[in-house]
Length: 124
Image (tube, rainbow, N blue to C red; front, top):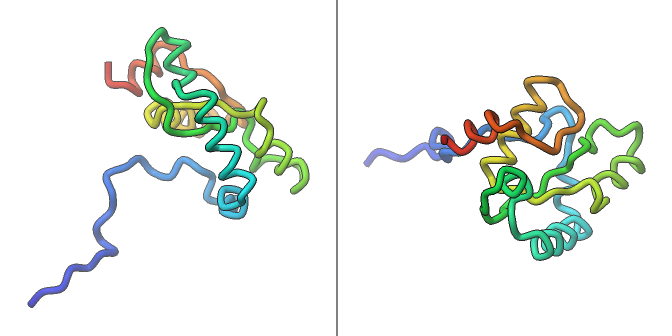
């Protein structure tokens, strides 16, 4: 009987939007982040980018406006990572589009999409 190689099957999702050179797992696996993320999503349940474009979409992701991976040191990285002023709630489409924009233009910070970028992200 043939066996299924599970390593070949990949989920149909966009490529990882987080920096691969920076090990972010210790940040995202911390209890401080888990609590902050949950609280922020409860307080901001609507995608902030969609709201800027007069649409209502539930938020599923939390975006760091300023990349904490570009911080000068670990203390600054933790400060940026856990600062509510550095967060915004986004739907998956907007989150992916913002990170795509950051990658294309080599940006360390991004908190908005143009109308064209927004429409492309939502296939409109």
